[in-house]
Length: 96
Image 1 (cartoon, rainbow, N blue to C red):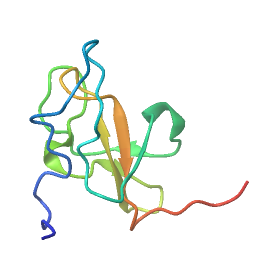
Image 2: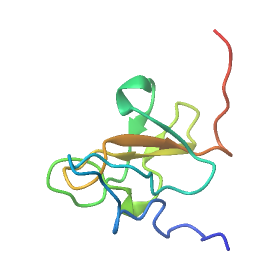
Image 3: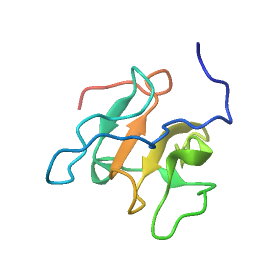
């Protein structure tokens, strides 16, 4: 069953980690493309949910493309993995 917005895009509760505290399993929706946020360019952070030091996924997609479409969710707060989830149905890979 697919959730409708504004449900959480990537719930983080119960995320698994190894003995070094590194996350093992991304908790985003199936089919999303997960990258390091530093590898994405041209996105603008919008409507950030309350957090102590970064963006959280609890408010849904929060990265706006230059075309005006929300395309990704940034996770950058201290309590969640540092990652960017690109929505597979809103982005596509193109050659250089």
